[in-house]
Length: 70
Image (cartoon, rainbow, N blue to C red; front, side):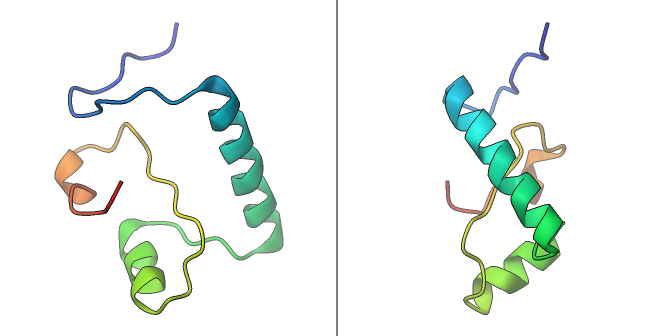
């Protein structure tokens, strides 16, 4: 049974979308063009280099990503 979603997540992600997102992340990882961590992602966004950003639902503490747009 998967973990229940955190209190601050007020949406449902369809299973098909989760699978498609995972496939995109796998392809990005294999290409070597993936950034990990909030700081690296913020830098990529500010530089205009980010094309696709995935934010995990189980970030703890949630304040780490609270300011990012959804």
